[in-house]
Each structure stands twice: as C-alpha cells, then as structure tokens.
Length: 99
Image (cartoon, rainbow, N blue to C red):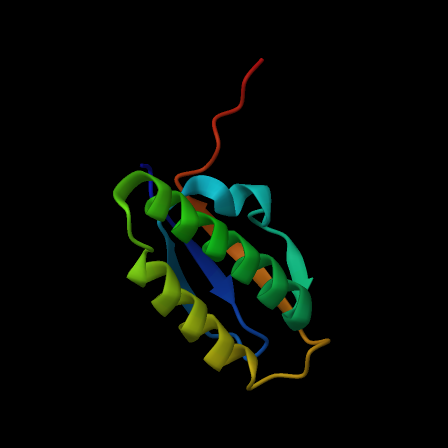
C-alpha cells in the first residue's frame, strides 16, 4: 500500500509535515491550494480515516500513524480561527499525469 507525506503551512507560517498511509489524500487535497482551517481539518480527517480503513481492510488493523497525524493536525488547528487560511505546500509522491 503506497504511503505519502503532505506539508501544510499554517497561518503563522509554520510548516508541518504530515503522514498518510495511503495516496487517498490526493482525493481530498491539492498541492499549492489554500483551505480554511475548518475545511482543511474536515478534508484531512476524512482522508486519514479512509486511509486508516484501507490499512484495516488489508492488514486487519487500523493505522496508528494515521490516527497520530489526525491528532497532530487537530491539536494544531485549534490554535487558529476556523476561517484562517492554510496552504498545502507539497504532497509526496505527487500524482502522475496521464495523457
């Protein structure tokens, strides 16, 4: 199962590297895009839950790293107003473009 990282720049300029057990993050976030804190929290939580469930389906247990990432994002998000803007600065690996 492919895993990935995604880097988020919070409203205070801090960049946080986050982990996902699945490339599913690409279904919910776009590199270079801005989101409100509330929208990012909703999208990332949904994607991390989905990734964790993919791990459960394949290996029989949820992904503890996805849960940890979700907790880290949530604890950082509460530091900012829900309408503040964050940016997804990078996602690795990226999606291959097909012709």
